[in-house]
Length: 224
Image 1 (cartoon, rainbow, N blue to C red):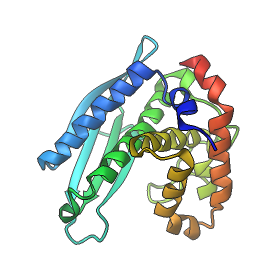
Image 2 (image 1 turned 180 degrees about the horizontal axis):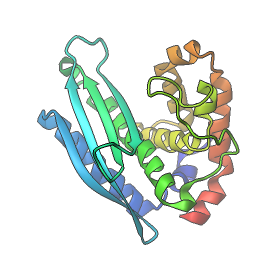
Image 3 (image 1 turned 90 degrees about the horizontal axis):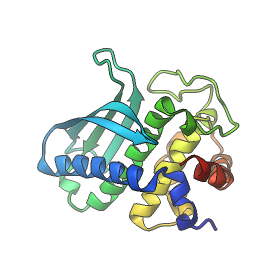
């Protein structure tokens, strides 16, 4: 079994700077949600090794009183038509009747999602953060409502997505005090229907993510 404490530092970047930065952003997002506002915007500068990446944070909180589940989070990072600076956008749909009971799970997923997307910010802005997973490396450019690669499997195991998923899920594991394997299975259970729809072999995806986490411990230690 992989020990979370053995690989968390290597997979989250600079401990003092990156963790404090992510903690501050997630705290602001969660506080905005608790205040009942319909959205939250911020201008972020992500530091790394004396450099900075600039990104606009744009989050929507949308009440869905009739949805059966407590919340869903859709997120992405990239250019927008109206802004010169790239944007990290999140759309959060939630059923207010299921809060505060769902707050712990909500906090964990907010932190996971931000870690995932901030990894993409870093990949685009800091050369040493693009860690090759030796998987699918072509541009991911499918429509937003489809897997952004020729197949769902290739998307999940692409060079850009392997590090982002691993780091995000490690963040969830830390917040929820679970093992990495446990949160991997949680992720699969959340998206079981998607895996079935695209006939994606979860066991192969999981193995690739686990292998990448182990294989890149030393690489990540050297560049942080």
